[in-house]
Amino acid sequence: MILSKIKQLIKSLIANALYYSGVLSYLKQKTLSNRAFVLMYHRVIPMSLMDDIHSTGGIVTEASLFEKHLTWLREEFNVLSVRNLIELFDAGGEIPSASCLLTFDDGWRDNYEYAKPLLEGHSVPAMIFLPYDYINNEIVFWQEELLARLLALSSSGDVRHQKYLQALTGLKVGAEKQSLRGYITNLKTKSYAEITTILNDLRKVQKDITVDLSQDRYLDWEQVEAMSQSVISFGSHTLSHRILTQIDSQEAEHEIQESKRLLDQKIEGGVNAIAYPNGNTSADVEHIADRANYRIGFTTKPGYVSNRSNILSLPRINIHTNNSQSKPLFLCHILNIF
Image (cartoon, rainbow, N blue to C red; front, top):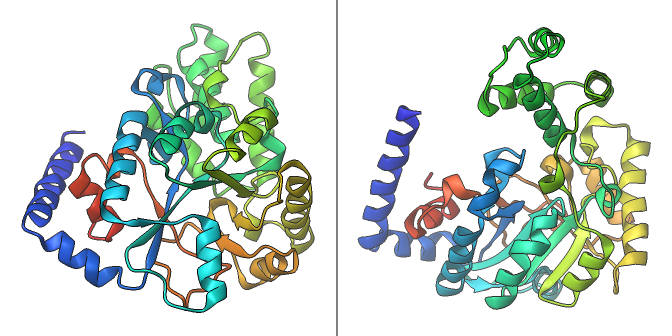
């Protein structure tokens, strides 16, 4: 923890020196000449609710900091919508220098509660990618549910729960969130069948325990409709959010095509953009997306967008509280300094 704080302090000092010396301004002009960047957000949460959510810090931005991001983006960059970017590709000309787009993955309910008012207040367009099966549904992503259930085991006074926790994770009662998240991260290499088995077993063990996942829910269709009347548009994040390169081609095709068909029925004007879950894509996946009539696709690979980029495999830059706590740090992250 102390080492992490020291590293963060060093980064802040370097970022401030680069910003106030004018070096960042020079690098911005050079790096983003006829290029755009796409920011990838997930969750926007007020500080008062941080302890109530079960997502990793790598996808969470504190709400008051997010508002600062919007101010900085308006000050420093040419803010585009996804529709603007598609039109630029269609026109075949150069992308305006230092352009940027905002996107959100997963369709968290906090996007409606906390991000929407801020985006509207700063007139910043954004696109939210929806995993269709989770919208208007009480289910949550397996990572959040699993962490909530492991925390319940870790704080349990029941000896059976304590033994189950140690047998499952190798951790003892009292294990903190960070240790439990490490176990969950390692599970990402397992098959969906194995993860589902672990979750189902946990649900049986905890059948008499209420696990609070109220702050980890997703949007409903009324919220989507209200957001679509503002500066926010929507794209597909497939049906089940399964990683497309880890399932067979027929399943991937169903995830891509059916999510578009269903979203076209729910959203006025339909959807023409897709973000691949976890950013994983391939030539085959992009071919399916093309045949399904998506105009643009996004990964999670960092980088910049030019008129020579593959429009169905565009890079994005992940933003969260820990890499963007000040304007100099925010700009350094965008410019790939650290």
